[in-house]
Length: 159
Image (cartoon, rainbow, N blue to C red; front, side):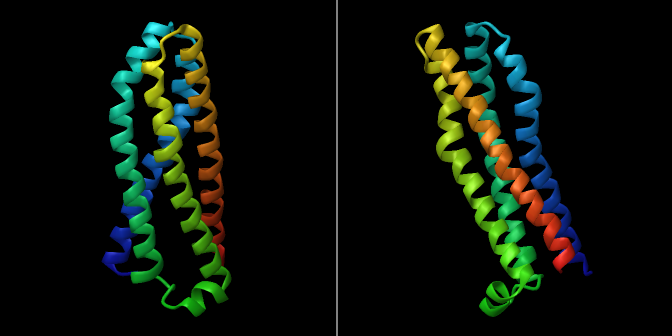
């Protein structure tokens, strides 16, 4: 393995850990704590954490996907459509890419607006519903990440 491939792989894994880890932290640490907070505290936390988390997770997601494409194509084995569609590795890599793009889009189009809705809720019931939506959407995102992780493991045995 050459240095460019090693560094690209290292960065890909680092950013993926941050992106996936953010969801794990949200699902198993942050959301259980938020569910126990008062509506005012939930609103303040959402206002403070939401924008920071959005920027960090967006950057980590973009970096993970771009580096994954580079690993698969520029320094990896996916050098032709024939390889992409005609081998187990190529198909698994393609599924992984589609899943990563779907998880990224889900985060940007569904989860981020749901987080932004928490501080805008005008009643305690609206706010409780907004927090519950964020929890559900974050768990759905986790399912996507687990599917991506599965494809990463499968590629290790197919390559």
